[in-house]
Image (cartoon, rainbow, N blue to C red; front, side):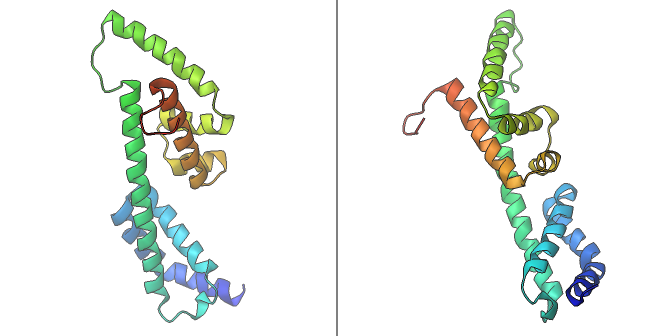
Length: 173
């Protein structure tokens, strides 16, 4: 084991449990492990990390910044999820015959709209919509980055909006 690897292993053993608790309080249990892993990855990518005077403080600063980023992403995902629910009419409780027929027509248009998306984009969108997976879970399942999944979701939602709402005033189509 090289000297940097030994230092990293020591830092992990000394601080990972505490760092995980810190991250869990800020982003929740599901995202905490990712924050901790990313914090150590960021540390590893820093030149000369093994000679840092206060590596624990540095790790916690990285984790804090990552937690803020994760919270922003969660807020964005929540906003998109609310838009999806509103768009699909899942918040409505009306169940008359007209609503049923209208729902079938909308479902048919929705599926046709999804077929227009590139396969990876469509797959990511459907995993989010039908399996209720987080962007991180979808990224792991598809073997891509969370950022790629974020882009797929934005692209899919924008595409669906354009097909169902048409061009908006003041917005490019």
